[in-house]
Image (cartoon, rainbow, N blue to C red; front, side):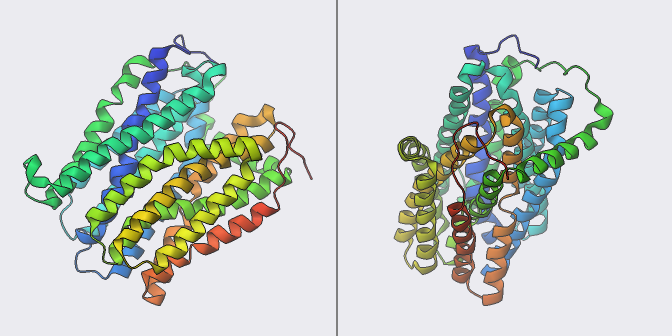
Length: 426
C-alpha cells in the first residue's frame, strides 16, 4: 500500500477528521431535521399526512437504493485508481451544491425537492466511501482506532452545534433578521452547504492524494467493483456466524435508520409542532455519543451481543411507545431513549462483527459490511409509508417497524460469538 508522507502527522489526522465535522451538518440539519419538515409542510402543502409520508419514504428508499448500486463501483474506484481525495471532493461538491439548491425549490414542488435531495444524499454518501478509504493513508496503523474515533466524535459535535444554531434560528427568526420560520429553514440549507464547504478545506490543503496503486487497470474498474462484491459474498456464505449476523444486522439497522429518517415526519403526522420535533433531535444528537461510550464499556465486560439486545429492546419499546404517544412531551422521552440506543447499537454491531471475521481479511469483510449498511433504510421507509397509506394511520405505519427489530433479534439469537480472528466455516 502506498503511504502518504504525512502519515500519522497531527495536521493530517485533524484535517481528515474535520471533514466528519463538516459533512455531519447535512446528516443532522438536513437529513434528520429540516428536510422532513419542509417536505411535508412546504413542498407537500395540501397533501394528506399519509400521502406525504409515503412520498418521503419512497424518496429515502430510492436514494438508499442508488447508493447501494453505486457502492461497489465507487469502492473499486478508490482501490484501483487511487483517486480517493479527488473523488471525495467531487462527490462532496455535488452534495454541497444540491444542498444549497434546496433553498431555490418553491412551495408545492415536492418532485423537484425529491430530485435535489436524492442528488445531495448521493453526494454525501458517495464522498463518505472515499473519506473512509483515506483513513489508512492519514493514520499510522497503531492509531487507526483513535483516528477513526476522532472523526466520529467531531461529527457528533459539529453536526449538533450547527443544528442547535439552526434550531435557534427557527425559534427566533426575528433575532437573526429573518422574516419567519420558513425563511430560517431555507437559509439553514445554505448554511449547511457553507459549513460543509469551509470545514472541508483543511482536508483539501493538508491531506495529499495517495499515489496510484501499482498495476492499476482503470478500464476494468466496473468489472472489478462487482467481482469483488461477488467474491466477498461467496466468502461470507462459507462463514455461518458472519452470514447470520449480517442478516440480523441488515434487519435491525434498517429499522434504526428508518426511525432516524422518518421520526420528524411521524411527529408531524401526529400534529406536533416541528419546533418541538427539532429540539428532540438535539436531545438524540448529544445523547448518542456518550451512550456509545457506555455501551462500549458494557461490551468490553459482557460481550457485544447482550448490549445489542438491550439496544433492540429499547427500540422495540420506543416503536411501541411511538404508536401510543399522545403528547409532545412523550416525544422528548422517546428522543432521549433513541439517543441511548442509537450510539450503542452502532458501536457494538461493529465490534461484534470484528470478533467474527478473519483478521487477515478484515478490510475486505468490512467493505461488505459498510455496503450492507448503505443498503439499510431501503425497505423500512417504504414499508412504514405503505402500511400507513393502507391503514390510513401513521401509528400503525410506525408499528410495522417492529417486524424488523423482532426478526433481527431472533436471527441474532442463533449467532455464536467467535474469538477475534477465528471465524468458523460450515
